[in-house]
Structures are given as C-alpha cells and as structure tokens.
Image: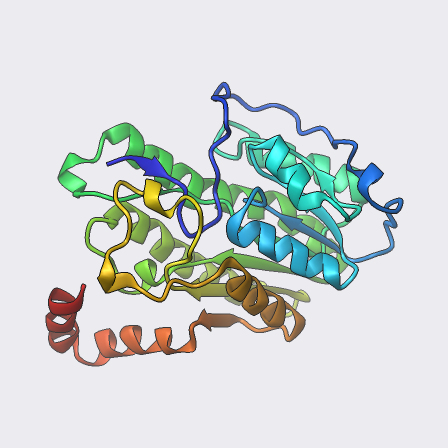
Length: 285
C-alpha cells in the first residue's frame, strides 16, 4: 500500500524535493509561444503536470486563455505548457505557506485570476487499519487543507473584481465512500461540503463555485495506487473527457457536473434507500 497520485492529477516529482515552501518563480515558458497578453482571461490550474490537470490546461489554451500552471514536476509542467504562452510556477502546495506563495506569485505575474481549477490531489489505496499516520496527514493536507487555503488566497481578488470561478475536483469516492480508500473518500466528501457552503456565501458577488465529480480516471499512475484496478472498475475515463466536462461547466457557469452523468444515481439511491445502497455496494464494490 503506497501513497500515489489519484484521480485529481497529482504527480510526485521524479526526484524527492524538500518539504518546505519556496516562492514559485515563473519559468521561461514564453519561448514556446507568443508573448503573454495580460488582458486575456487567466486560469490557474494546479496538478497540471499530467492527467486531468494537464488535459484541462490544454483545453483552456485551445480557447485562448492565459494559463498559470502549478505542480511539483517542473519538466512535466513544461511539457504541458509547450506550444502555449503558459506561465509555469512549480511549487509544493502541501508545504507550509505553499498556497499563499503560489497565489501571490500568480497574481503578481498576471494581475488577475479568472478561474482557479484546483486539480492537485493525492490518493492512497489499502485497508485503513494499515494506513500509516503520516500518509493520513499527507492525503488530507493536499486533497483538502491545501485546496481550502489556496481558494482562501485567491478568492479576495475575485470578489474585488466582481467575477471569477473556483473549480473543485471531487470524486465518486466522496459521494458514496469506497472501500480501501477511506481517507481519500473523506477528503473528497469534505470538498463537496465546502463547495456547497462556499457557493452560498458567494451569492451576489459575481464569483461562482463549480464542483466536478468524476469516476475513476485512466492515467499512467493508476497501477501505482497499491494495486491496479480490477475488472470491477473497467471503463476508466480519459483525462480529456473530464477536462471537457470542466471546460463546459465553466463556460456555462454550472454549479455541478458529473462525468459520466450516471454518477448522480448512487448518491440518490444512498439518500432514498440506504439499506439497498449498502447491499449493492457490498455486492459490486
């Protein structure tokens, strides 16, 4: 059982990095594209090294958005940025002060953030009773705490501008709870509650909150989740499919989006018939 990247597009660096906050410094990514135009809409995408984050960044770039890309792997971020005018800001959001430093650097670089796609996340698969305490802390720190702190740092500028959107990436695990993913499920459930509460607070400010719930996503790191998904979890989603849903949700100012759409069903069954839901879950996982 190991800590691994999960459906939230988190990628550990190729080489270990000190667990400390460092000021993100914009890389020289402009050589790959035209000069930055700060009058363009700006999207800050975390977890952009690969997976959903990278696919989301590319989808926004197709529509001409200015991108700010965050992750811990500088090389992979530059690969995502290739062919665009994206600004690369490598930083460890789980490090003390990481979210604050990233937000400050992003706002200093572009002067605005119109959309925050909080895609960084971490997963762990295995029995909860065997999960090391340090891994519990790491999953909760990145998947929940760091996301909340980053939103807290970015939100005032959006409210002051009277526009903006925060996109939080959930998971079916947070809706129904998945065996041997107890902490990851708890973190994603916490994000769901946070999204709903924050949405109510921001009513009338011009700032919206989108919560995107996806099923299991097919990424290169899936086999590193402690064990690969078995036959019960066939039909994995592509990162591009989820990125397309995120794009459409932002474009249409949607509060929630599910991919695939049938993921709305398990939560409804759980609410209306919890006994039936648990029997189905015990049988089909």
